[in-house]
Length: 201
Image 1 (tube, one colour):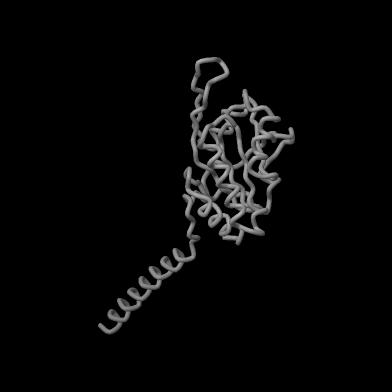
Image 2 (tube, helix red, strand yellow):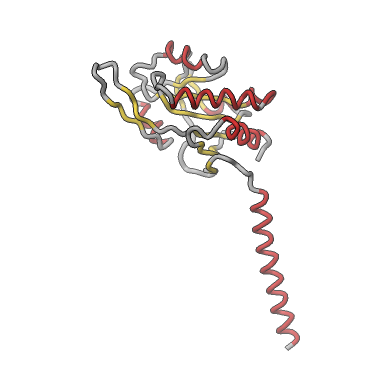
């Protein structure tokens, strides 16, 4: 009888320890403000030409937290808001701001020439990078990142606009996808999440 009681007590203690272990693990999980997509099987990277004609991949930005946003230069509000938030987040990080890399991927390579992209991203900071997929690369890279985009015809052949997904993706300094940031989450949220990643979480 005593042995049975001791066995039940031991089992109960083991259960408590296991539960406590789970709680403790949960406490160690980073308190991200963006949506944690660590381990996702999409948004794994890119191999695209930048505004200077140089082919870039995530490996070029090793050691930095990288934020990738898809848009187009003639976007009236969503795109400039997203890039401005990145610029503000860099400022909020102070000395670590240089370790936050903003990347803009155009979904409108037809109009967004390298020269136009260079001038556009320069408005947000000298180290911002613009990537220009070819017409053949665009469907693949947007599918890889699960980005929606659609050309909406205008009154003239060149006055069309582009519907597109408005969130951004954040990679850690090792080049692993970690977060999805909803549009207009704010510079403070971007900076807070980047700080966590830069600290090795």
